[in-house]
Length: 480
Ligand code: FES
Image (cartoon, rainbow, N blue to C red; front, top):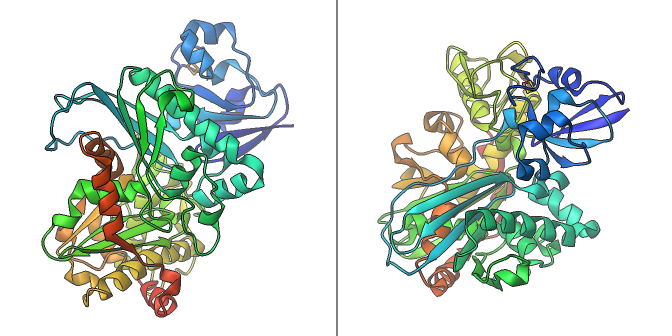
């Protein structure tokens, strides 16, 4: 038997050697638009691990570069050795950024990179006009060694650290080369783990109490030091503290949080939820272990926000599926919507009780355990926000504005987020802020790095584990 793993969801399929891949993948919901005749490329897959020798049909369908990058027509292959395949049909949308901003012109080209645990987005900018000339997005190739920061850290601590560093440097180097080898400056914004992994730093302190970065400062490289065919200066934004990294710092810069009037917050919803609250020049931040429910993990039919995912549920139980077609699973925003609808319908009670599995479509159900996972995730974020606002003698409801960072923050239905008590604030005061990490990295191309370093020092990190009320607040905030 051979194992075929489907990225990015990590779905594992077993098949006898020689079984047509079409038969194996069809059972997992993959479509073969031209009936497997090798004409449409709709079944294309990228081999991210293992080997699949290119066939004559592959060579007719793909360019030399595509073939080298591992692209194959699934319909023209059979199961051979163990492989990990990325399905084009299940491509995830990676959030870019097209917002204008004020800048002081510079000469030459620059590249801004949002280095996420799951996805990478890079943009090439003309530093004279501020215009985005080209963009590239990709799934982080480190994902083959675990979907989240903790599994990546575990892999690093068992001897895989240099491999992770090499993987990410090679991948970003290839993106930079495709964008332009003439860029004079490259800024990378990532969370603390990505900062450490890219920089070749020991990641262990981030995976063990008290979760403090080993070397939080800005990292400086010359492109050549990283093995890239460019002499550009490469800078990785500094971490703020704990698991709050340069991506959040970029977000604080991009949203102008420090200069906003009133009590304001920036929240990045993810496996590690990050919260920053600011008022009158004082800024506090924390990170909270929300678990992977928002990313569709540990949910019975959970998946990332890719083709086939239910991403919205109406109170009348109508589901919207990404890309149309049949639902294969449910992503974070769909989960939040489903629970909000369940509360409205009385199927789910405020303390999270769901009597039995609730079918959302023919193949997708919401189980009582899924509801529990969401309670843990939303409880952690809501508790973090409540404890930080309490330090300003306020409650989350008194926030004048709350910016939601990242793809999930962009996709989530604000009314549903309030309905389940994830955010206890007027939905009108919630602003989806887009890819704030990329926005901040772009600003860093036009600003001195010292501005970011000064800002990082002004934000105080509050470890929630040391807050005496954390456990009680977390328990309270698990209620819907
Ligand atoms: S299904 Fe059309 S090329 Fe494979």
